[in-house]
Length: 270
Image 1 (cartoon, rainbow, N blue to C red):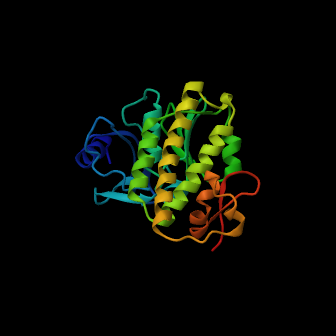
Image 2: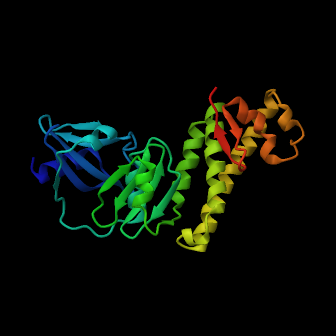
Image 3: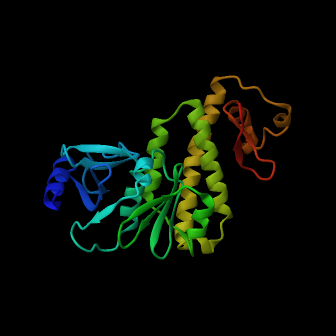
């Protein structure tokens, strides 16, 4: 297919978005589209139906969604030029690309010299600042090996998306899962050295955002505990004045206990 034809199909289906890359997958007969959501467009046309890669079928000329893991398994890939060279990709663009590939909210964003990184449940995504190429690293050891002089960065949009996700997932087990993740993330963000942040101002903003979300979830858990009886184990009975342990009966009922080494939550088999 000619690039003009690919752009025509893309623009018909994804108004308000920007096509920044195309890869031809000859073994599948698909053209994989690298899309950035335009935050100025009020109607994103539901491109957040991923984690999948938006593709154009070479034969039918129709839009198809390719499972993200299947996409990363493809070996025969031919990159195509869209509009020649791109300006450097911004943090906002990189975030949208990563967020569109992940079923769950991101836990944090990092910046290195040549890329932005985002941590999600599926793995660790990187977006090259110059080319916009995105890849996912699922092995934690490899991920750490790839990072060099990384810095935490603040993006308000990430926290907005987390809050939206929490509003849409409010069952008791979902709340316990979210609280454990958020409390632990807040714990580790506080422990990180200032040098690990792009600036002290961004450090304060990141921690403040996590504190706000944690406090809202904590209040929700207390309300739920007041509406239902929860067994209080002997190990907690004399610690209920401690806010951390006050919600332990709720967390235990939904699959969590406290870590003996620090004040964090760990999931247990039920």
